[in-house]
Amino acid sequence: MKRRGLLIILSSPSGAGKSTLAHRLMDWDPTLSFSVSATTRTPREGEVDGQDYHFISETRFKTLVKDGEMLEHAHVFGNFYGSPEGPVRDAIEAGRDVLFDIDWQGAEQIKHSTLRDHVLSIFVLPPSIAELRRRLVGRGKDDEETIAKRMQKSWDEISHWHGYDYVLVNDDLDRTFDKLKTIVEAERLRQAQQPDLFPFIRSLQAEFEEENT
Ligand code: ADP
Ligand code: 5GP
Image (cartoon, rainbow, N blue to C red; front, side):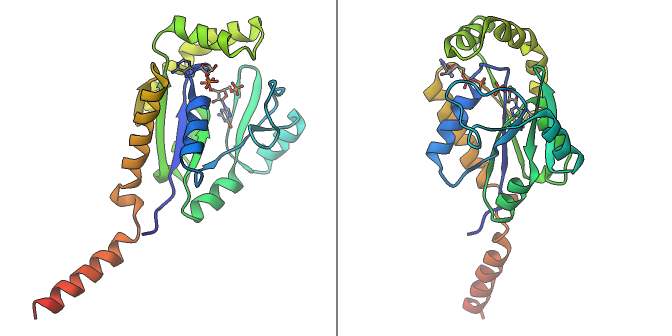
């Protein structure tokens, strides 16, 4: 049966593990479409343009926003980030789910957009603030100043946890990932996500009536 596409939004304070979970989800289900954000920040070592992000200039970013090409956008840690709308609409029209790794401001904007009925939002918490710092340092991709800025902003992000459909404490990665899969699998089975249920029920009814006449 055909499914209606979900917009699966993962948010968390930087370092809690949402990119790691997002990558695992993509490996688990290759039919998922990852929303590649545009950003004005410089690439981290190992990041691939067009795959992790579209790395673009501030001028280009502002043009895209002005032309209405962003589903949402925000200023985070001194850089601009945004989700291009075209690929999201294409995926949804094809009945595919789209995965977003975005902050609370972006999540809010999508929840108030015309695509709001498709949204499944999940907030990822670290097991402790000390562990959040350990993960940011352990990731080894940001300098001390960047890490300090991200730690300082972590509470800002955490304070928006209650606006999400689900909240996961990412203690053990395997366990958290299992919970994430469970959420996605259950949400896909919601009545509202199965537009073909109506014709199917009608066919059951016709069969039932035929048997009972
Ligand atoms: P975010 O995308 O939220 O900024 P990342 O996914 O980049 O965070 O994770 C930050 C670091 O923490 C990475 O080095 C990642 O391997 C590690 N990490 C993620 N989840 C866990 C976990 N459950 N336990 C231990 N380390 C984790
Ligand atoms: P990072 O620089 O660590 O990749 O991302 C910094 C923060 O920006 C993270 O919280 C990430 O989820 C968020 N982010 C990434 N892309 C987007 C986007 O397109 N829109 C918004 N609103 N936030 C984003």
